[in-house]
Structure formats: structure tokens, C-alpha cells
Amino acid sequence: MEQGSVHNPQVTVERSWERLMSEVNQYDDGLVKNWKEDIDTLLVFLSEDPADTVVALLTQISKQLSNATTLETPQLKFEPSSSSIRINTLWFLSLVLSLTSGLFGLLCKQWLREHRRDTPAHSQAETLALRELRNASFREWAVSSFLAMLPILLEVALLLFLAGILELLWTLHLTPFIVISIAVGFSVGLYVMTTILPTISMFSLTVLPSYASDKFNDNIRAFHNICPYKSPQAWWFFWFCSKIIRHSSLVQSLFAKRNRHVVRMRDWSRFDLHLIRRPYQAEHTSWRMPVDP
Image (cartoon, rainbow, N blue to C red; front, side, top):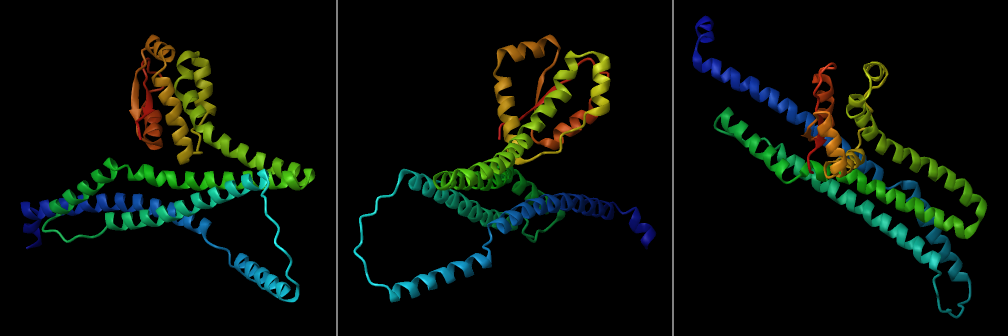
């Protein structure tokens, strides 16, 4: 009975569909899992510290007790200084951006849950068609780009908060301002460096070797690896630089002289595969540019 079922075309088709759906589900589960982990990290960063709540409550109780034992004094007209206005503007803007990233992080988790909802279907082909419809809709509505923007939004909020701290320290004393400025400058410098290094690495791996000697090419292949700092903001920086290059007549003429043509690229992984598949000794290579998000 089992021997005959192996040669049954219907059984073979069903097994093929099951194998196909297994591979597709494994890919989709891994993709959605990565997105959810990024969102969970974002929400953990925005979670409230219980110690801060206790300190705030104790401070409020202390003020209430002190106000109960002191005499009322006439209220003077309050005129905020320009530095106080700037500090509050930076901090409240940072707060709004942080809450916004948290809000849309929750919304994105709801979108992902609905995207991976197990809907009963009449056949494996119908299930696969439903999956393709959802994935195509995700691409057309740029959900992945939206998800990539959430960490950037939180990072901007953090930079605004640090700017507010520096403004506050400037009004208090010069010594803490200098010390904290050095620490903030170091942190921001590392942030900027990790943002631009992937772009520099891509140029050195693609454009520069084609204009150098074979000996220089061998040195680059032996000692130069792919930059692993692949963050959303680094991708947007690479996309921005590529946009400028694409519309630069001078750079395009240099590409034409070396028989190089521009091929669009969607993400980091495609670029990595391009480097692996490209023959080292090929005379005509193409530099892949990112597609418009």
C-alpha cells in the first residue's frame, strides 16, 4: 500500500505543496521574528523605571509637607529665560518622539500579528496565494521601511535629550558642561562613524578596486571585509549618497569609462551576495545601488 502511494501523483503533489509551505513559513517566521525582536527592544528601552516613580512620589510628598507648614507668599510674575525655553523645547520634543516611537511600535506588532494570522484555506495553493498577497501588500505599503524608521525616531529623541542636558549644564557651571560635552561628543561621534562606515566600505569594495592595480586589488581582497555596522540609519545614509551619485554626471561618466553600469539593490544582503557572486578577475563589474524606499 505504501509502495503504491509513493508513485501516486496526487500524493507527490501534496508532499511538494507541504515542502514548499514549510520553507515559506520558515522564511516568514524568521522575518517576522526579527521585526518583533527589534520592536520589543524598542519598547524595553522606553519602559519606565520603578525607581524613578518612587523618587517622584517622595519628592511630591515632601513638597506637600513643606507647603503645609509655611506661610503663603505673594506670587511673583514668572518670566522664563531663553535657555529654559530651549531646554524644555528639546526635552518635550524628545519625549513626544519617544512616545510616538512606542505607540507605533505597538501598532506594528499588531500589524505583524495580523500578517501572520493562520487563516484556514481549502488547499495549500490557496494558502500560498494568501501569503503572497500579504507579502506583496507589505512591500507595496512599505511596512519594512516604516519598521526601520522606529529605531531612528528613538535615536533622534535621545540626541535631543542630550542636547537639552548640555544646554542645562551650560547655564549651571562650565566644568560639568565640558566633562559631559566630551562624553556626549564621543558617543555621538561613534554613532556617526558607525553610520557612514558601511557606505565607505561599499565604495572601497566596488568602485575603488576597479581603478587600482591588480596588486592593490589583491591587498583589498585579502584584508578588507564587509563592514558589519548595518543599521537602518546606515542604510538610509548609503541610499542618500547613492542618490547623489546616480544624478551626478561626473560620476556617471567615470562609470561609463570603466564599462560599469548601475544595478539597483534593495538591502544589505543583496549587496553581500553581489560581492560573493562577482568574479574577482572579471573585467566588467556592476555596482549595485539601493532602490528607492
